[in-house]
Length: 84
Image (cartoon, rainbow, N blue to C red):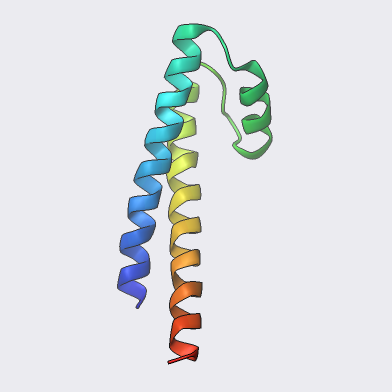
C-alpha cells in the first residue's frame, strides 16, 4: 500500500514539476502571466519568472505534487480497505 502511494506520488511530482517548468518558460518567452506569478509566489517561496524561478518552481512543483499524490492515494486506499 505504501509502495503504491510512493509510486503515484512520484508520478504526480514529475507531472507537476514539468507543468511548473513549462508554464514558467512560456511566461518568460511570451512576457505574460504576471498575475499567475504573483499568485504562485504566495505559496512557492523563491518563485519568479526567470530561469532561476523556473528551477524553483519545478522543485516546489515536484514536492507539492509528490506529497499531494501520495496523501490522496493513501486516503483512497484506506477508504477502499475499510469497505472491503
